[in-house]
Image 1 (cartoon, rainbow over the protein chains, first blue to last red):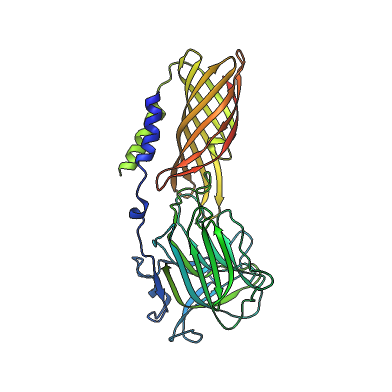
Image 2 (image 1 turned 90 degrees about the vertical axis):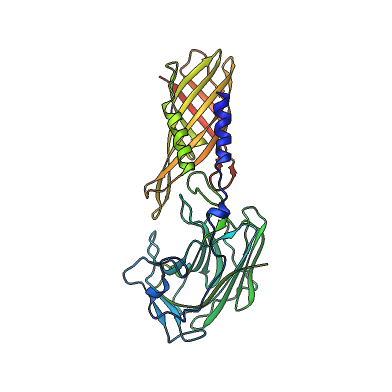
Length: 254
Length: 154
C-alpha cells in the first residue's frame, strides 16, 4: 500500500511537463491593419496574423475601414448589438498561441475611437487571457465603467477603478490612446498600470495578475497568458456600439 | 502520448483493484476532494487489525458557464484509516478526472488528511479533513481546501 501511495505521488511530479517548451509562442505582435482589403485577410490559418473572429450575432460586423483612421489609411471597424443578460454580444479579433510567462512584463498599446454618446457601461475593449482545458478563459480585461477605463479580472480579484479625484472620462468620437502594462505574477507580486492618452489613470502594485486553478471550475492554468483580443470583446447591455481600433502593439518590456 | 498512457494505466489499476472484504460505504462529502460536494462509494481493500485501506469512487459536479458547459468530476482515491476506540486518522490520495459537457478534460490530484470518528457497532462515520487539491500536469499548484464527510455502511 505504501508503495502505491508513494508511486502515485512521484508519478504525478514526474509527468509534470516543461510548460514553457510545450506552450511556446510569440511574445510580441503589432498591426496597423494597412495590408488588409477585407476582414478575411486578417486570418491566415496558421496564427502568424490573427487567429479568429468573435461574432456572436448575425448583425454584428467588422470591416476594414478607410474613413476613420488613426494612422496610415486603414483601421478596424467593429459594430455590435447590445448584449443581453447572460448572452454577451461580441465583435472582436483574437490572436492565440502567444506566450507571456510569469515574471515577464507585458505592454499593450492601441488606439480606440468609440462612436456616439450612448451608454457604454461594461463595454469591454481588450482582453489578455489564457486558454485552459476547463474554465472560461481567465485573464484581465479593460472595460468602460461609468465612462472610465476599468480593469476587470476573469478570476477572483477585485476590479481596478480609477481614483475618483483624478479619474478621466473616456472621450467619444475621437481617437484615444490606451496603454496597458502588467508584470505577471500568480502571487501578489505583480502590477497593473493603465494610461489614457499617456496619462496614468490606474496603478495597482503588489497584485495577482495571473489566474490559478480553482477547484474544478478552472483547471489547467499554466502561469502565463496565451491570447489577446481587441474590439468589442463584449458589448454593454445598454446600447449598440461602433468602435474603431488602430495601431495595435503588444510586446514585452524590461 | 506517454502522459496519457500513464494516466490510463493508473486509472485502470485503481478501477480494477479487487477488494478482499465486503465492507462498503456510501458517503457524502461537503467540500473536500470532489470540490463543492461529492457522493462517494467506498470499498474496503484490506484490513490489518484496526487499520483499514479502502478505495473510494466519487462523483461531483461544477457548473462553469454557458460557453464552457458543466464539469463532471470523478475523484478516485485510496484511503488509509489508522487508530482505535472510535477515533482514527484518515489519509487519502488519488486522481480526480474532470470531463466537461463541451468535451474537454483534465486531471488533478486530491489529497485528504483528516480525523475520522467511527463508533464501533454503528453503521456511520464522520470525517473532517484537510483536502488540498494539487495540479501537476502543466505546473505544480497546491490549493488549500477542506471537507466534511458523512458515511454510511451498507
